[in-house]
Image (cartoon, rainbow, N blue to C red; front, side, top):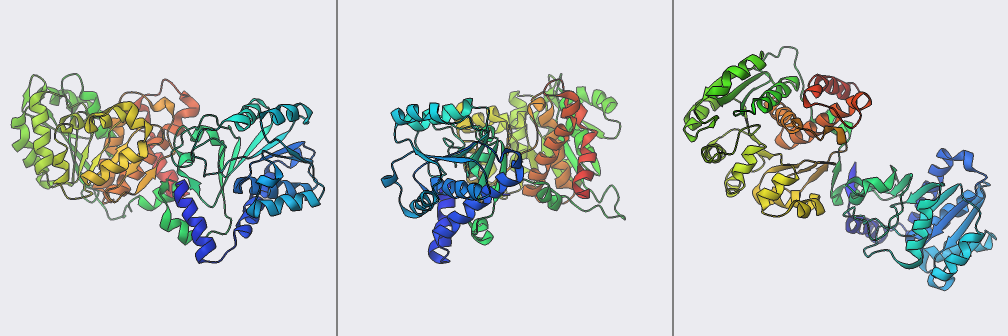
Length: 516
């Protein structure tokens, strides 16, 4: 699903009107009818209403006026409330206001807080409320009678339908601008908006439906800020499994992981790689941990490496370099430890390894003081998978600063360092070196537990081993990982789910994707 910012949506409107010659009034009629048709389809039982359509004075209000007229003509009981004086409404919206008045439709005017306070007690208790107060152009905090109306709507038990975007939500960032309307359904126009598919905006939209209104898809595709991943995207990313294939066909992964007390991280990543389809996996780990991992990993090869006090030593580098000679991908970081020697080792590997790299966990810590090493690697061959704390460490900023602009943070780092950046969290962001963004909708709060990131590292590396391009591997792995957790949510809820519980789900999710 293509996702646009507010600015990109304005440009799409401009091109459609100015360059293609489709009048704005045609787009307004199409938009209003699309929303009305969605209401008619879903809420036919509310035909007797009462229905309230709350309209601002701009284009979003114009859409609302079209909705009000369409529902009235279908026999619905509709009252329109305009949050401005009639004289303040202009352009295409004014035309639709005049039409509604000529139809003798019930219209109320609430020009200020005093007028609103007088009006609301007189209105019938609504069964459905249509939000057409603000659209994607809103950029300042909601105040005055608009804020009061939004608070009143949120307290109402009525079904709430937002046109294009819930009023009070920033369309580009998902930030709440003072006060926001919480919709049950948002019918967004032409394309989803970035602020609707990232948090906190996701919580405000209810179910999100995209309505086609006449803006050419080619225009939207050219302007799109990113993609909200869907099952069709993931299906296209997954590799073929030829019937004549063998374990060598599907790649050999070298995983450098584990330390004293953290062998479980290495085991989870290795098993996830096998479950995701890698042909062979070899784990390089501190010598003292090799026996433990050999017992845990019956299908995985393990190799003891030089260590110092239970963590890898920098003298392990020649051993690792020898191991990568016949491998397809190297993943490094799960449970690795943060000793000075291990940090030095990771930096050597990142500098000299010719293979595609997946870098996670303690390996990210090792890179935090040497991110310039990433720029020297071939563009797009390195995948980093930080959580917000690790992202903050890599950039030398606070977690709050990362979370305040997850999309921008991920995009800038990927572009600057020539890497694929997987910023984990609710709605994980996958950023490409060319500035492209993918947003993952799968997963849930029950997955916020130790070991989940190790699984993701293994899945990404496995897809790389099978010949998937780095960006596609990262995106598909994140989606499959989240979907594996979603399949277990009915059983476990939002707490008590273990990372190991997901392992057996990974192949089933892959089958599910390919069968749809």
